[in-house]
Image (cartoon, rainbow, N blue to C red):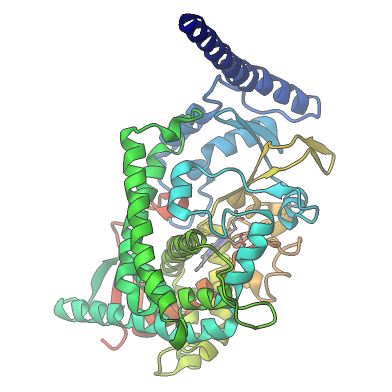
Length: 522
Ligand code: HEM
């Protein structure tokens, strides 16, 4: 009897495995890609052919590797052949939109503003973000960047007050005091040299500075512990970079491979460190939770929409941890690259460097910048917006419709990926004019809305309900740091600089940004 039962269970298991294998290997990896490609072909949309399991990941890897040797002139801002050679090739070959394959996931790459606006404004509520890579998920957590639907509404309501302008204005003082010691150090180093100059690698310095700023503004007196969290997140980022284009087999993320074990260990470490910051803060209830981002978030978690006190947190402890991970990571990497590329462009265009210096000295005088003086830096705003247009740190936004949908004349099936390559749209000559590839801050003279033929064409912080919650924070930080540097130093690119923008999830200078600083009073 027992033997019969054993045989029956084994047969049932085998049948289950065969059904799963059939669905996964035959339906999902073979039949569906053919059907999807055929469905798009019938609508006039073409693209590179699908390869079993790998999709076009190996093409992407190969084209990127070939393009890696490309070096650009410092005034050449069209880095698409270096950074997104696969999209450029497919656009030339198939026109837009085109279909490509990220593993077995079909993705439609949109190259026109009309469709992009429809997706990002998401008035029908049909578009969600695509499922994040497991390591990216471990690094960012399921915070505001990745949550959807009613969860997103709940999270956004809790996080919003922390980014209100009056709160950010108070944080400007913290931003300035984080930059001050760095500036003093550069002055000291320059004074030691006979030339009275000093060469600084800005990409690294800005990463440290923005980590410092977000640790202080995010966690107040616990900023040292906050920085530890950062370092651990960076290790997860390195792991994500190394594995991003690997084929994701179902269930693979649960296997105790070397990378998965490392990922789990880092994830646990981050959670423990953040709990150690958050729990004492919650216990300090009576004296308020503090006016840093964490304190403001906890306050909002415990306040009703009518301003009354709640007994229970609106977000669970795990959700608060995930929000901390999110604003830590989203707030640090991106802003540091904005600063880096602004320094780069101001070194290449000394006439703009001088204009911004005059403006900073005129508006701030001898004092350090404040939120009010920063508000008067109009030309600085124009330069930062133009930097974001040409060298915006975020290059790709991904979405998927949650039901079959029409986008203009195109039918897109439920779950199909949608890719929005920002640098391509920012170089669209129909929208930005013939000088779309040039550095021309004056295009923003009359604000973002009037800078291009299409309103809200600047996508660097995205547009619509899911646009960046930290954009005012980032602009204030970039303005205060740039104003302080401009008032104290003149600067040029070091002769060792090599112009090779690179995609490390965000856009970064591959070999860093060495800059020669010369204190102005010398
Ligand atoms: C130059 C700096 C920054 C850039 C270029 C940038 C860019 C973006 C972009 C493009 C998105 C939309 C992503 C998508 O929809 O797929 C986004 C969302 C977001 N950003 Fe930023 N960001 C910057 C700074 C910051 C800062 C300083 C913070 C926080 C301290 C932050 C927090 C967030 C959050 C939480 C979201 C998700 C918002 C939501 O979905 O409701 N970002 N950012």
